[in-house]
Image 1: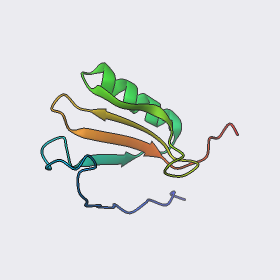
Image 2: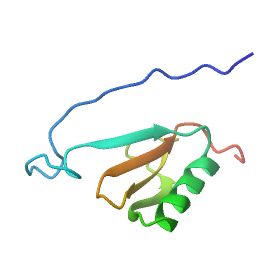
Image 3: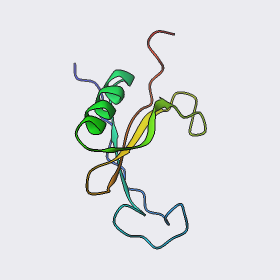
Length: 91
């Protein structure tokens, strides 16, 4: 049996900093990872291949108690997020 797949979601809003929407400010691609280890690996690969840190991998309880994510920019300045919503399997 195949695991259920979350549907794609498109959210549109104003840039968080209140400035004009431009490349790298006003949009972000978020990718759903199957687990926290995948979030960590994606972040390490992104930083190791020229990306810049925008938020290390970790819990973000301001979103919800199990939100685990990492934020980075690619070499062109586009902001990306990789996140997971599952509980830590070691708990």
